[in-house]
Amino acid sequence: QSVLTQPPSVSGAPGQRVTISCTGSSSNIGAGYDVHWYQQLPGTAPKLLIYGNSNRPSGVPDRFSGSKSGTSASLAITGLQAEDEADYYCQSYDSSLSAPWVFGGGTKLTVL
Amino acid sequence: EVQLVESGGGLVQPGGSLRLSCAASGFTVSSNYMSWVRQAPGKGLEWVSVIYSGGSTYYADSVKGRFTISRHNSKNTLYLQMNSLRAEDTAVYYCARGRDGYTGWGQGTLVTVSS
Image (cartoon, rainbow over all chains, first blue to last red; front, top):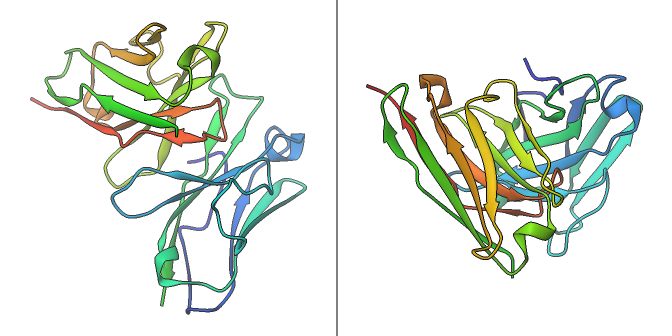
C-alpha cells in the first residue's frame, strides 16, 4: 500500500487529454513537499517528466503539465500520442516516515 | 551529458552478497545527492537508499542493516553493498542522481535472489 495513491490505469484516444492523480496526506503533499513525476516507457528506466510540482525539464514537451492542490497533485497530458503509452509515477517526501522519499504505486496509461 | 551505468547484478542465493556499481560521467558524484531505487518484477518503484554530498546516508527500513551505500570520489562511482540478500530483494536496481526529482537514471541492473 503506497503512501501516495494513484489510479492503476487510465486511457484515452489520440489527441485527447488525460489526467493522472496522486493523492497524499498532511504529512507529504499536504505539508507542502514537492511532487515529481516520472515516465517509464516499456522496458526502460524511468525519466523525470515534471519536477517541483509543475516544472518541465529541458526536452519534455509542453503537452505534459503538473499541478498541486491541498493533499493531491495531478499530471495532465494533452494531445495524447501513441508514444505516451507508459507507466507514470509520482514521488514526494513524507515527514512521518523513517524512509521519507516515497513513490506512488504507478499508473498505466493506455492510448486507445 | 549526464550518464549513469550500473553493473554488478546477477543471480545470488538467499543469504548471499552482491556489490552494485554505478559509474557516472558528465557530473561529479561527490557533489550531488545520489540514490538507489529498485523495481521488483512487474511492480512499482521503491526508494532504497541515498547518500548526501556531505556523506550522510539513509536507508529504507526493508534494507537497513543489510545494505550500505558508498561512493569512490576519484572513480566518480556510486556503490551499493548488499548483504544477507532475501528473495524479496529481487529487482532491477537503478542508481539516480538526486535526493528526489531524479535528474538522471542508469539503465538498471537486475538482481535475482534465488536458490
